Length: 212
Image (cartoon, rainbow, N blue to C red):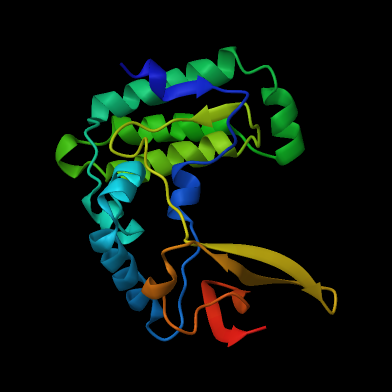
């Protein structure tokens, strides 16, 4: 049942929930709520044909708040055990990755295993936290061939932004700005959010509200 959760794929990049959870947050004096409301409004008004093509559209916040997994403590132990077997016995690049990146995925898995051994079902941490830790462990080796795949309800989901961000350099510093907005989304974004606005990257992602 759980063997499908851990596989190696040469054609997959390290994407998935890690990127999903760390997607840029647009923030500027309450603009987060405005953009979330815009996304909900768009989800209610898209045509039947587009809805069939896109599936169920919802905001990232709404998805995360309702994404409840079904893995028990024993299920998680099995996954960690399989991960240890995979990396210890089959991953030939482990010594090289340890030396190159100063990481130890085996030790992290053993610590997670110990933590699960001491966990009782009534105090089980959210499943999302478990998957985030597993993803961090697998991505720590920085190998595009080694991935941690998620079960339902996380598999098959993806996050998207209805606009394109591109970079340029100004005075030797990399800058980011919106260059395109997907067709059909223009009326669901704030009026000042249009091609040419700068994306300011710091502790959070926010937009300047001004064109370049």
